[in-house]
Image 1 (cartoon, rainbow, N blue to C red):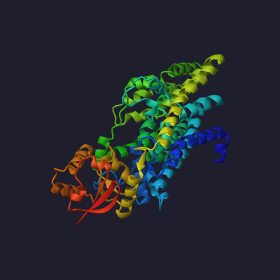
Image 2: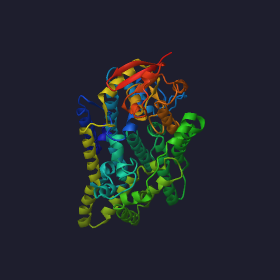
Image 3: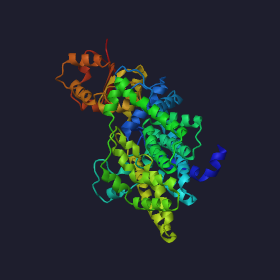
Image 4: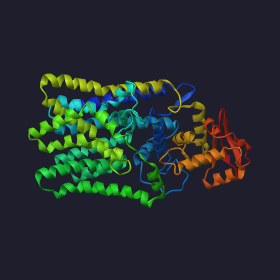
Length: 514
């Protein structure tokens, strides 16, 4: 370890600094909780963030495989989200939600350091000058595109907003601020590609990398196979021969990816989940605009590398120019395939800068760097603003979290709870229970369930229907708070089959009586 880190003191120090910057808004949010509010643990993507804590809570309550918290379906446990489940086993005792949220962000900070090291290592394969490697590493991990500038200028950019503030695959910093598993998978993928490029991958290292990729982010296997295909295909064309042993690890990755792809065929819940888990890309012009300022440099860099005779490395320039098209492959979640393309674009741009006259290159490098780092600064400012102004959904009313904790103390792990969608999203992160509606991809037949919730709280609905609905969906508890009151004016106090177990302020929950 010392032999590896000693020549990489700069990327290590930079990674630690970047990790601390991403932790700063979260520390501010915990400090801002006060008497009325509790911090959810997330400043962006709160719905997904709650689901990650809910998965960690599964592990804290003894599970080793995934049992969906956002449905009451009786399903065979699945081998997915295992890092979150296993990470949750490090927490126990009181203040469990706080432990899990802090644990999440500490490991995420470690992932930021690892991705800085992996980015530097990959860039070092193709960028000779140390200053250029640092430039690439900083912008690949903390840089953004032109979309933010359009937003700042008041230009309407479409339903997704600025690409660097919407797509964690398109740039680096959004995943580092929020998505632990995506950041870890990105680091592993870069190290795996680096080893394959150097042709020094041992069977142990390759197996470990593939297992980690599959555990952290199965979709990263698709990214790896796409990028490796470009690398291998280009080398094969230039060398005019194929080395069979170089096909072993991609074949293994294809096998593992195939096994995950079979889950929707073999598992009913996974099938519904796959149908609902649709991640679409923005229109192509978002990508064209976001990267437009660097493509001329990348093209010039590719030409310069070709002229210098470094033709094996020229595939990186091709990757830099075509990677946005990967988002439109005819497969589910194709948007994920653009991961890593931002790094390739910066490597090719660094070649282009190096090929320019020095008097131009220096000023242009600083201009590009300053332009790219502004979105990260804007994002940090937005997160700090959200951290210092407690409101839903980033913060939860303390009365609501107190009710969640009271329910956690009474309920048995896996109990079903009827609650509105917003309540159902947060509740499994605080109590080891299951709900029927709380997360789009993981709540089967979500629209039908939300319609059923509205009918449940409609005063005109017969109690016989409500009782049958609770029994059919294996719901032992009914939560009643502000979100549930918005669904209808019916009160659980009117039902003879519900027994009040908790009532404090605007929150209550009831147990289905025998």
